[in-house]
Amino acid sequence: MKILKVYQAYFSPTRHTEEIVKGIGKAFSDYPMADIDLTQYETRQEKHEFKENDLLIIGVPIYGGRLPAAVTEALELFHGINTPVILVTSYGNNAVGDALLELKKCLSDKGFTPVGAGYFSAQHTYLKELGRHRPDAEDMAEIEKFGQDAREALRLMVHYDVQNLDIPGQFPYERPPMGPLPFQVVTNETCFYCGLCISRCPVQAISQDNPKEIDSKACIRCGACIQICPAQAKFFSGDGFEGLQKKLSANVGVRMANWCDMANRKK
Image 1 (cartoon, rainbow, N blue to C red):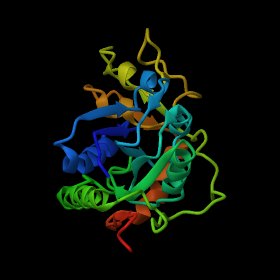
Image 2: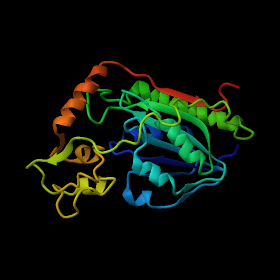
Image 3: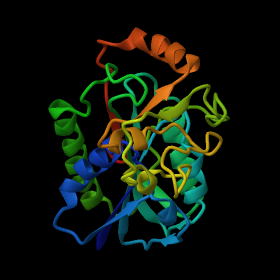
């Protein structure tokens, strides 16, 4: 099939998913390209329409085995016309759940045809020792190879036949979407009110007037404000956070694998 334009879409509060999507996108760097940063609140309120000769590469982090609610809401405004899509999820070197299958369903219902899918390990937001520094050089080599394989698969397709695209997960989904977590983001006295966290928060949970004020009900504990803070003034806190870290620590030192598949690979 002839591709005329490539779109790279990602919800990536800590930038790891963005890195993965753009690693795949390297294989298509000679095409006209456009980014859709779904981390930005305003971008998620916009309609995004795609044609049959467009290619969408979309990446989303896994939250408790599912897609973030902010993403599923944004995908309601995506519309394709038999548009090929490469589906990507990133996980904190812990568990992959049903998020990739959920991403497939969300976009298939909106006129997209999945032609490739993969999940890739990234450093966990709540425990840096879990998947530390991933995606690393080894991961990026796999990710870029996946992009190259996807490009070749698309070149050979006469039409988009995805009967053999194997995506892990189960439906009905094993878990409900991730709800409020029993810990908060707090700010210490080193904050100097630069406002970077306000601009980066994907759900506008931080007060426009005072970056120390965070709406705990709106906050999704994504870690964007913590990562971007130049003063390291923000951090997760609470008994629930310590308990979660203890639970996650069981996988520290284990290198979980990446996974990917293309629609025509098994033909």
